[in-house]
Image (tube, rainbow, N blue to C red; front, side, top):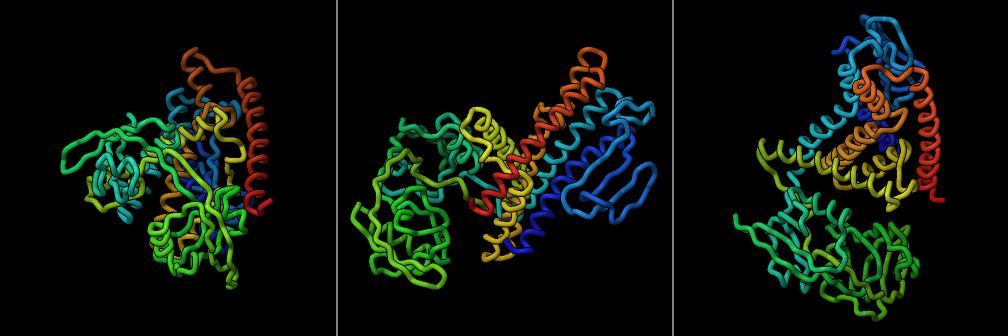
Amino acid sequence: MNIVSIIIAILVFSFLVITHELGHFLFAKRAGIGVTEFSVGMGPRIFSTVKGETRYSVKAIPFGGSCMMVGEDEADPAPNAFNNKTVGERILTVVGGPLFNILCAFILSVFLIMGAGVNTPKVYSVNAGLGAEAAGIQVGDIIRNINGHRITTGGDIVLMQISDPLDGSDVTVEYERNGERNTVTYDPHYEAYRIGISYNSGAGSAEIGELAEGSPAAAAGLKAGDVITAVDGTATATGEALMQYFAQNPPDGSEITVTYERDDTSYEAKITPAFYEASVLGFEAAYYREKTGIGGTLIGAFRQAVYYVKLTFVSLKMLFTGSAGLSDMSGPVGIVSMISDTVEESASSGILDVVLNILNLSILLSVNLGIMNLLPLPALDGGRLIFLIVEGLRGKPVPPDKEGMVHMAGFALLMLLMVVVMFNDIRRIVGF
């Protein structure tokens, strides 16, 4: 990570947190709740000004922000105190932060689609010899439904594969062609020999992005970042050339010789591809984008935001069901690292690509920040919301001392969780 990418990452993360706090701030002002301080950043103040009852501050650590309200955490007799407003006003103030994160995700989606196009679920590649091709699916078809899952964006295909992966059973796909809808059912079985790498398949060099754990390539000593320059003596100057080579010479289990570069030094590795079988759709339609008009942009932005909302809930379900664990979670350190990596990986493609990738990641993070804060856990907005709903139902508030104890216990557990998550983030970054 370089200093520029880290600064961009911190600014992006801070922007999302400030947007959240701005939601609380505006709804508090609307309800007549006193805001003692609205700050950008954390730590000691380096600049502040007072306007009315509120101090507006810029703090030394450019990371996040805060909105401090009168009577937010303790009883206060002042008429502008949080605890002296109606239940409805307090609920709107609490929900205001997450609501602004969702609204922010929609606005960012508009800019993303203006720059990159709407994520239409249009087929842009069909795998030769597989079930989808035999069933008649063609490039240009628009996918509408897969195994009962309604598809409105390419992202919905990714979501379907995460939440309801193919299990070997026949797959049913509804697609649209020339305004007519067709439904086909086919066997998704796929088998091949692989060396276990993913790489840049575009016009740039064939740089390895990831290696499957325990794969033949990993066993032969290849690493992420290596650049493949030839296979069995045939030069592969680009990722596209490497992809074409494997398409014309599919591995059959025989040993192949891979020439690659690492730190400006050329190496050779003898690799025996391993047999691989899986269930696959047999076509690609998840990442297609096309420009559209104003109406299509707004609809596409709404669908993009909804997709990330659904993805967040699916991720939470995986966390609570054990499909994902604490090691898969990221805190502020991991998020900054993620944004920084996105900046660096996109830099070679130009500033527009950097901006679009940051926008896409910011949409995901903004939705996550909003929804995570609405979880019914003490010390989060959702925990406070639960107490307000209980107060509305029983006609009187939960005793402040009892609510305070719950929030304090929740805060302690939240801090413990943050320590664990931060440890995981640092462990991933330094690689131990």
